[in-house]
Length: 502
Image (cartoon, rainbow, N blue to C red; front, side, top):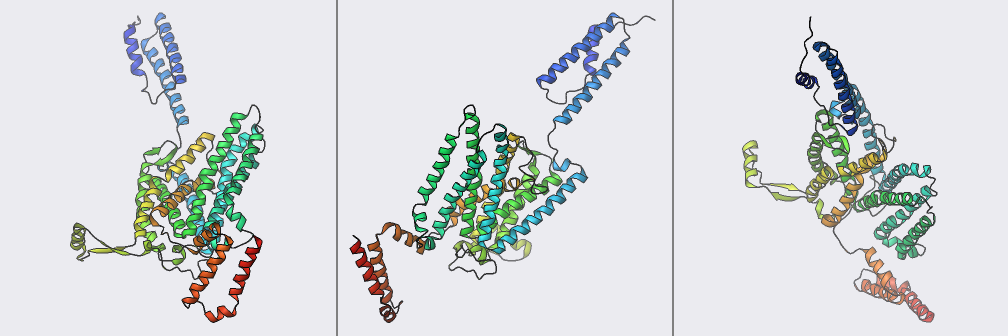
């Protein structure tokens, strides 16, 4: 039987019909491989036409080749895919991971509550320990390439700058909040009055040591390491300092922001676990739009309710006056910040009508404390802005090609992976509190600092004498006891001593 010879146009039509549809955007390497494969197939087709090959067997051969290429392409696609979304993971794996994360989360919450109840000083110490651990994890990433390039003193300088920064920041807080103690202590007074200059000189010494340690051929790398260290100091140590200041203003400004971030992270994970289908951002492939929206809604609701409970405890509401106090101490403050006092809010007429129609109750006003409304603003920040701190941390991990910053918390990674949003949230809470909530008033510490820093010793003695006279005239101090104490003789002797010293 004579073999039927098909025209080349028909052969090309069959060729394109049998090709698989493209399943992804090909790179230049993929396109080169496809062109090479197509050239080989055209050569095979030309050879078969010259040898009068059966067209049906030729088509089957081309189909088999195309099928193999499609399978190879599919395998490449599977290799190139990023992390699978939580909702799409295997059932056993994702439930096992969720159990681990839930157990460690409950342990961390329990430890957090225990530290809070232990007292203010332990809460501050916990922030310092966590800050140091996070800084260590971040610096550890840059320390590996520094060892490979034999950069000297990188680790030592990193810790030196950490100590210098903490001395400056926490020294400022101690001087501000405990002026009555610091300013009257003869040993601490020079450190208080010259604190900023001492801090600056400590930093300059580190800067000079860094410049002196620059090595030829490594300038670019050492400068990058220097910038990386300062980035870690700015984003970790400086922001954590504001968290400590929040504690000193009242534990509620530490607990509420931290709880909002935990709440948002938890419910974003749960919503993404069950319903997450739409990726949110490329930096964090497992974050989904469904989780983001779900976390936002639940954080708003729970933030309002949580603040309603926290505002009832003086231990959480009152500014720190005794660092040794704990949850079992008799902590109170009077007067309280008005933000914690509930006031009546008139409801709109349409809301009043709806409530009356549904519940048969005539409710025209509700009692809401301003702090509850402030909590809603903070909840919005914790849900919409604070996660970008986590996205930034993800970008750092992508840049250094690591999965997590550490492995200290099973199911979560390192401390940095859990605290990346907390630092940004704590910084925001401090700025928001200072701008909209804090009540400014003259304190004994501020007057004492003003007296010590701006009056001469002779003027300070004169101020003491006049204050003593005023208190005696107002019958606040017993005049007879004051006269018997020879206080006037003491003041006169101090004045004469000053006159003789000049």
